[in-house]
Length: 309
Image (cartoon, rainbow, N blue to C red; front, side, top):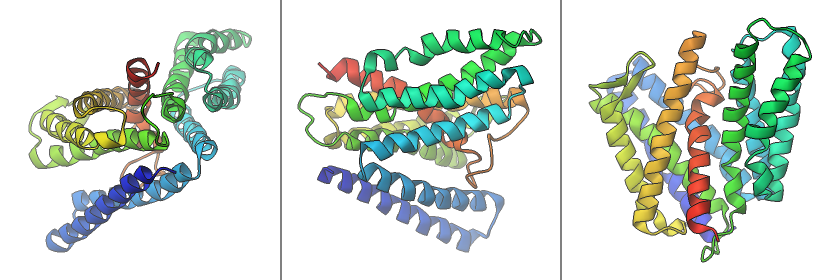
C-alpha cells in the first residue's frame, strides 16, 4: 500500500476525531436536542463506516471488490424491500441478486471494461424483461419491470464503478489506485456532509422542497464549493493538476447531489422517508450511497477518457 494511502487515511481519521469532539462540545453546551442528537448519531455511524472501509481498502483489491459487492446487495435489498412485487417477479429478483451482482463484480475483478460497461444496461435490461414475461403476469408489468431494472442500475451498476477505479491504467500515476478510490469516496461523502452542515447553518432557500426539504441552495453551493476546494487541495493524491482535481470534484458534487435528489423523489413516490434503519442518523445504506451510485460512473468515465491511454 502506497504511503499516500496512509497519509490520506490519517487525515480522514483526524477530521473525524475533530468532528467527534465538536459534536460532544455542542451537546454539552446546547443540550441533547433532536438536531444535535442526529449530528452525533451521524458521526458515530461514520466511525463504523470508516472503521470497516479503511482496513478493507488497505488489505487489497479482492476484499475491496467483495465489500462493494456486499454494499450492492444491501442497497438492492433495501430498494426492492420497499418496492411492491408479485410472485411472478421471483425469477427476476433471483437474477437481480444472484446473477447481476456476481457477474458485474467479476468483470470488475478481471478489469474487462468492454463487457463491464454494457452488461447491465444492455444485456441485463433485455434479460430481466424477457424472464419477467415467463410468468405471464401483465398486471402493472411495466411498473414492476422498471422498478427492478432501476434498482439494479442504481445499486449494482452505479456503485460498481467505484471499485472499478482500482483497475484504471493511468500513466504517470504509480501509486496504488486505492488512493484514487479513497479520494473519490472522500470528495463525494465530504460533499454530503458539508452540504448538510452549510444547509443547517445558512440554509434559507430550498432547492426542491417537495422532494427533499433539507436541501438548500446555500447548502449546495457552500458545501459543494468547499468539497470541490478540498478535492483541489488534495490533487497530490491523484494524477490530476489542481484545476483538474477541482473540476472533477465539482462533477462528483453535482452528480452526487442529483443522486440524492433523484432517490429522494423515488422515496417520496413510495411514501417513505428513509431506505432503512441500518445506519443511525443516516437511515439505510442506500441513503448513504445514493450519491456514490450516481457520482461513481461520472468520475470513472471522466478519469478513464481524460487520463487513460
